[in-house]
Image (tube, rainbow, N blue to C red; front, side):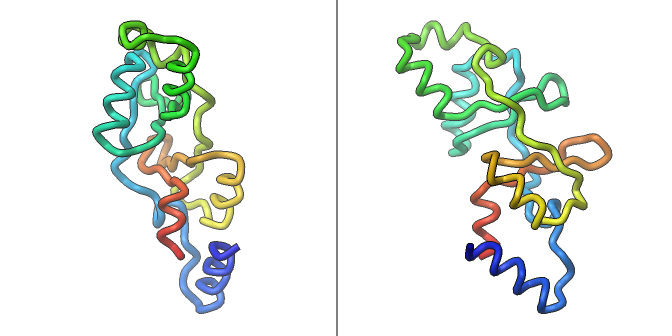
Length: 138
C-alpha cells in the first residue's frame, strides 16, 4: 500500500510520471538457455541476485531462480547432474516485457503476478525491474 501511496503523492506533486526506464536497473545480468544450471547458479552466487532472465541469443525465453535450483537439489539432482543439465530444461516462464515508456503504475500491477519485469527499447532489453527496485521508490 505504501508504494501506491508514494506513487500517487509523486503524481500529485506535479512530478513527471515515472516510467519503467526511470526505475529499471540498467545492467541486466542474464543467462543463456543453453547454459548449464551450474553456470546459472554461479552467476546467481557471484551477483547476489535471486533470479535471472533466460535468453536465447538476445530474446527472452524464460527465467531461473535460486528456488528452481534448490527444487532440483530437493528432487535428488547431484552437482554433477546440474553441470550437464541445461537451463532450458528447468526454467520458468519469461518475465513480462514492457516498453521503456510504460508508466510505473502499470509496472506495479504486472509485478503482482511476476517477480520482475523486463524493460525493452526498440525490441532490445535495456533494463530489469525487481521488487527491490520498486522499494527504492519508498
